[in-house]
Length: 253
Image 1 (cartoon, rainbow, N blue to C red):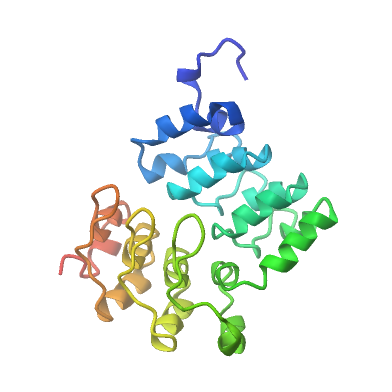
Image 2 (cartoon, rainbow, N blue to C red):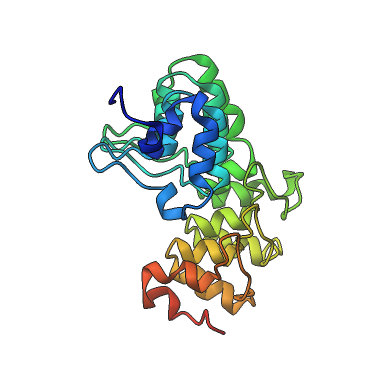
């Protein structure tokens, strides 16, 4: 840190660490693209979300997630925001991240799951309770869990969960879980064109993630490719970063 650095020169990572800079963080994020929100420090690999999790800045994490931050990006040692939240003993942050599509099955460079790095019983209990919920299982691509528990799930298939207001289908498509997405549509009749808090459809999220097979499948099932999200972009425009691999999937139809 540089003590005499003006706040206007702070990186998103620096703003995310300090709760008293919440307003400045929100102002900075108003006009940035998703790629900037997920920007990683070139040396440490830390994202703004990872930095916020380090200091248990729950408000910053909620806002970053609302803007579309990816909780599964890893830093230099292969740890995610969920790893660091568990390591420092923040059960409220673990809950926040799991409810924001963090994958509890990711391992760091030491081969440890985030749960294995839990600092205390409160953190371990948070993992235990939340792993019983559909949204957390969708984020971790647990298709067998859904097949085995389909008749015990009380929530409607199209319930929009948590801060981002995303459905199970949004979650599966965003994270590239093709078989789970297919099952949700074919076995549970999940709706294709519901939009989240950022007006992203499942097709937007699949295109942005570069998940070609899911994009093709959603289009085959009749997903609307003309929907426009919060940033004024269609699914095709979100997929441009991946070149013709995505834009050549028929998104112009």
